[in-house]
Length: 353
Image 1 (cartoon, helix red, strand yellow):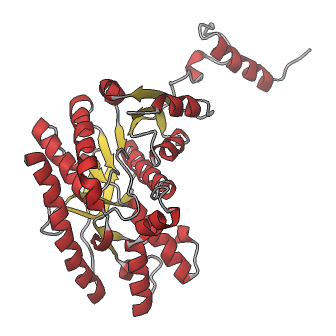
Image 2 (cartoon, rainbow, N blue to C red):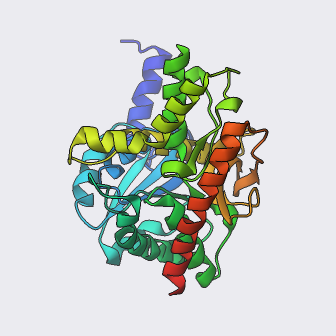
Image 3 (tube, rainbow, N blue to C red):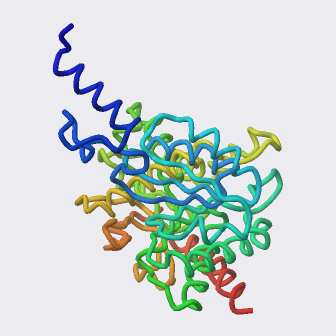
């Protein structure tokens, strides 16, 4: 019985996986067969992978074709999450790491480290209430990064981002590994919300809308620049006020709707993956990859500020200026800077105390 050449190739491909020692003369040489873990791509670690953000984030990263190896670290439940995700038929190889003694193994050789670790906000809890718990967690994890993968790009999600990014910077400075371009506070959820809420008001598909959001990542420090929306649009003073407030309080909206069952985890995981994917495309050398992020900055007098950044092989290759602001945004900027200054100082003081 005659096999078509396509069928022969399929058989050879199967055989190559079952018997990797096949002869070079086979229809499909071993070099053309992707052995497990041999897919081209980047090594990514998620620290806090068993949490409310960590699990959906891990699943979405397992689906990302730019990821070849995915390390999942947490202090609880990471073996179960790892086993579950390892059954997905996507290219990334998943490995789990449990508890402090395995942190270094989880981090060694990583290109990108995503940190959603920490406790979530509960109803009635301010972002400052989170501070003391999450600050200690971020400090420990960043000490591990400094030791095991000092050249990795770090995407920091743990709240309050306005304080945890300065904490991470101080940890890296102490270790002598600080590169401001490689430390990125993830504010993408503010942009994702802004795109969604503005699209609702304009009657557009949110995928067609791009709203720059600058400042920080909580309350009044979140400043959507509605005057710079793409496609160019104009808003009434009432619409501007409504949209700005809704974008600034998006997190509280979800906390209250979940009524004690958590905070924004699914939309946060989506936003984190959107940003991580942009970082990986930057690492790959793609041109014109621009996202908003909370980074070391000279755009204002503050040491950290969220603006648009161009991502490249070394992280934030270029930090963009704010561009023209209208009167409403100029007033908002002053309010944002005032609160942000205190949050940044609080983070720095935590390490220096």
